[in-house]
Image 1: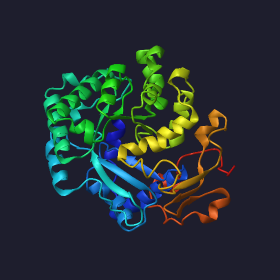
Image 2: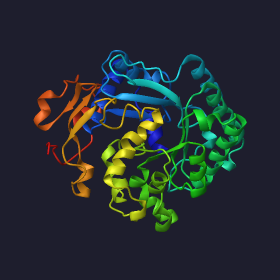
Image 3: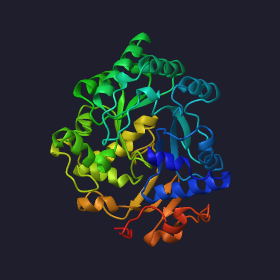
Length: 390
């Protein structure tokens, strides 16, 4: 929470500075081979004000990413008013990017339906239980029902299994009261699910929901082990079981505050079971091979924006967004997965990033502003390995 408070006290950027910094950040994501991203919503991101820079890039045809985003109510106790306003003034799945199909689209609500249904993932603190939050069930039910009525996809942040069970039970109740509309017609998901149980996974599968996992344990695994023990950490989260059950499974970073935005850390974590500090968390029965991990990160994640038919793999009928990598992900020694970058990223037929022998093709970006930005002095993510196409 201290980090959030510090960020909240930083100087407010001007419109020009927001557009500039957003353009540089998109280019930084292109650097790691990203051609699409899903913003699942987050604290401190007020809609529409804090989305204007991304929208400006999309509506001018100057965005180098295809972006789908969800709306997160910023004030506890005012979630209903927020969603009422958003639903009255916005339609889901309308593309606002003039250059890319599915380039900039509002998808639905999340990753909070209500603050009372959320549980912070601070493994240094006691486990928060949503059953202790007065009125959580009634308030959350009302918000989910609004999404059902409007046909908006929804997702709910949930870290601990005790809380995830209560949320999924609530989704089941609402589904039954709406004659199976959630199960048969909608996309919905649980985000994170570190200690989700087998019973709850079976219910999610029955209700045709999905689970999106992030590499928070790669950064906080040591703290989890210290509090709950190494045995409890072995399936935290149980992504191999989720994958084997055929439940829609996506992966991400939860960047930029909970973890780094570097996607290769996620792929390293899912395939090795290690934290960035080197602690081995998982046995082989909770690891994905490199092919499956890449599938989860790409086409698996596309399910959550209802775009799996056009994104996530190179095949006829899908977008030809592609990257050339600095190393062969499938054969490089596992510790080098973390250092992989793109040397050429192409989105919608346009070069979005170039490095190494493709450096001359890299788009020219405006100078970084504001003048105090750390990016101006230190650049982006530090990688000791200079990328070279191999």
